[in-house]
Length: 370
Ligand SMILES: *[C@@H]1O[C@H](CO)[C@@H](O)[C@H](O)[C@H]1NC(C)=O
Ligand SMILES: *[C@@H]1O[C@H](CO)[C@@H](O)[C@H](O)[C@H]1NC(C)=O
Ligand SMILES: *[C@@H]1O[C@H](CO)[C@@H](O)[C@H](O)[C@H]1NC(C)=O
Ligand SMILES: *[C@@H]1O[C@H](CO)[C@@H](O)[C@H](O)[C@H]1NC(C)=O
Image 1: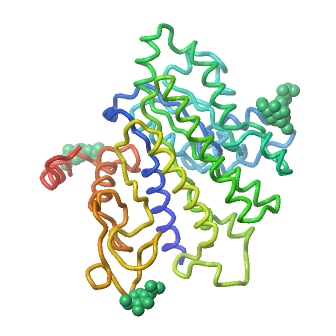
Image 2: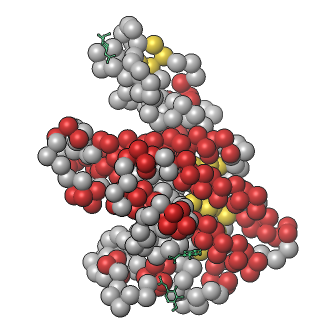
Image 3: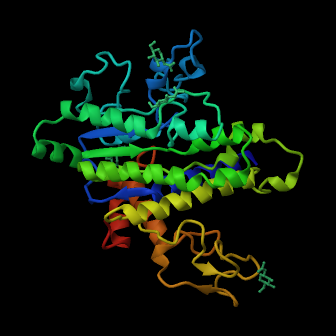
């Protein structure tokens, strides 16, 4: 069960990260000269540790955090590198420094290759929202809007003329998230019902979409917007919501079904909103990750194992390239193609595949590749 569960987790995490990626300009990977990070503990590379006033250090400031790569705690909630670190390394850029607590904290010279504003526990929504709903804030009070304002304050020290700034922003990769996880975790912890928390999803998604719009208006061209990882597979969540009701668990993965459905609900909304707002997107699976293009049964899944693709009464929708899922267990060519592209061109796959070994095979297979 452990291995099938982690396979499920990785597969889903990967798709959500890919699927919500917004690219408004087909900049070649390798052209980026700076990375700007926003988010929570999935992205924080040291801000929270610095901002913490507690006499007791946060647990991620202590070993064995950091043991695998850095060999000491760095403030990352991880044994080693985060996605933003791997992306930086794959782009040939230095690790993105945290905004707070660097050797020259606040010095723009440190930030010419970008900076990371992410803070552990950061929600998408402002604190006022939680206050209004009577949801206690047990974390540092730093929302997406707050991180964005730090960026806007910093920008004038990174570029000077308008053409200078426009070029700088065009050549920068923005990683906006994941956001939303803390909004929902806080709300569930405060005893809010599933129905109630579902009603927050449009607000959370709107906050994320508004932030992407603000960045686009500033001249940013590439923003990566990760979706939620499947929370029902997290050991923390599985522990918190442990139940003797075996029906609550996915029998193959052991994950909590209702929570993963909730995350999918968020991710679907996010994807719809980003597709609506982005000027162009090269990852245009508008039919989502969840609906089988070819199958039988009701939406959103359109899957019935008794009527698999090819057997009546199954049928295929038009335009399979708009779908990730082909027949339930398998993906569409468009999805496989995209994954192959990202495997080869990065930066989403670690370790990076040696392209000199595979590029000829792939270009033969896909003459219009890229
Ligand atoms: C930490 O202390 C500073 C200075 O006293 C204060 O401005 C800040 O709000 C505090 N941060 C937290 C998270 O309590
Ligand atoms: C959270 O931050 C907002 C905006 O920075 C501020 O108005 C609010 O008072 C803060 N709330 C708490 C509990 O610190
Ligand atoms: C699945 O397909 C079979 C065969 O067509 C059918 O008998 C069954 O009712 C379907 N199940 C659902 C849930 O649609
Ligand atoms: C990649 O493969 C090529 C051809 O086999 C080889 O010469 C090169 O050393 C490999 N690069 C790495 C980083 O392994």
